[in-house]
Image 1 (cartoon, rainbow, N blue to C red):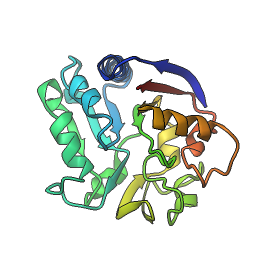
Image 2: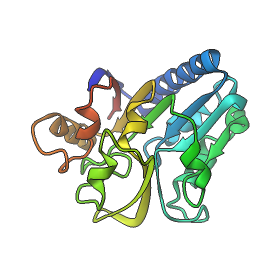
Image 3: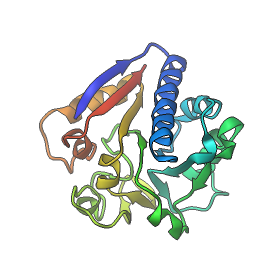
Image 4: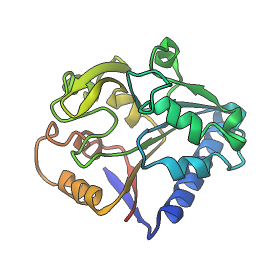
Length: 218
């Protein structure tokens, strides 16, 4: 469920606020547990946020970073989310963090539970790799799923994908939904309405009891 909507007038102000909130949550987890785990999304939307977060001064050596989902392509491919995160987050102060990619990396299945998750959403209502019409979609969005990472294919995804299933996302202490542009806001409002979860899989997140903060700018 959406517990708070934070609306900004620019990408810069959103990136600063989201980076600050994420950094504070990571610092809090480190203070409590001695470590923290952050799961982020790929795509173009989070670039400025990740650039900003990379230079915030927290104990990055105690942070593990992973991906919410990934295309099954090597890091030499421009569509690789791992490549994107390495370029935009794993630098500056955040270079001290440990990065755990998903593709061809079994270590990802045993990563610790997430402290912070930052999700995105497409105009088709997908989040993570929960695409409308995806094979294994029901398994991916099952709140009682026992498999942490699954492989799926979907009409809206050119390559097979790897994605964490819904329980890992909902178990995080802080879940943020980062959207930019009127088209995505319109899609988000539609997803808040009635309709089948499978038609707009972001509804699996929005309809869960987990409090989620929306961050949006034009």
